[in-house]
Image 1 (tube, rainbow, N blue to C red):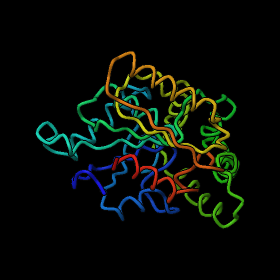
Image 2 (image 1 turned 180 degrees about the horizontal axis):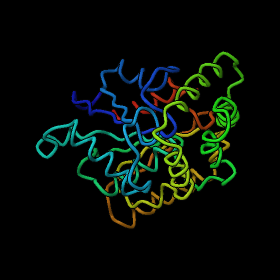
Image 3 (image 1 turned 90 degrees about the vertical axis):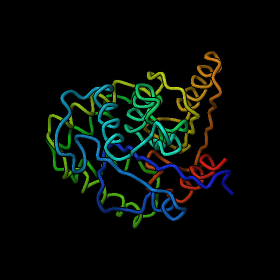
Image 4 (image 1 turned 60 degrees about the vertical axis):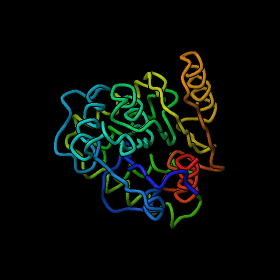
Length: 263
């Protein structure tokens, strides 16, 4: 049972995806529990209307802040309506940057799925901009196979469908390359946010191995303690999960999110 009947809206921030049809992801389970879920398309992905002037943390944070101001009213009077940011992969960087720069626009709870806790190897980070030069399905297949752990051919096929659709909706090739540079140049701990934070990751993530996520959790815990803040760190691992836990393990991921939101 929740301690309050008020359910804050959930604002999902994903890298390499947009708000279009695909596999069942974690939001489906959360909507069933009465949560409102929002999916802004982060430039240059999905159906974003334009590129950012510059693909950096400040501009991504401003993009999210502008979205919140346009879609949520009276946040000063009703802080319970401030959205909980749920950032996956590159979206974890955007969520952390937004929480650091605009703390009063977002909930005191922050959720990071498969966070970028260490800068990815350049060889891996470069897979994304390769989609602007090589057949999208080829690069999509290689990168998705790397990011997943499923042995279920049907499940992989469904995830690939989403990858392919995402790769067909870019605002510009320049934007894809610039966002890849952003995501490979930062890690979550670069941003000085102070929120109750839940980290959920796969214990078999090849892009960001577990040891780096453990280091991130420790660093955040020490930051909060040194700052004498009341915030805490929760960390949960999904057994056998890869980087795309929101697609491969949507129900289990949703249950962990609910556990954090409702405690």
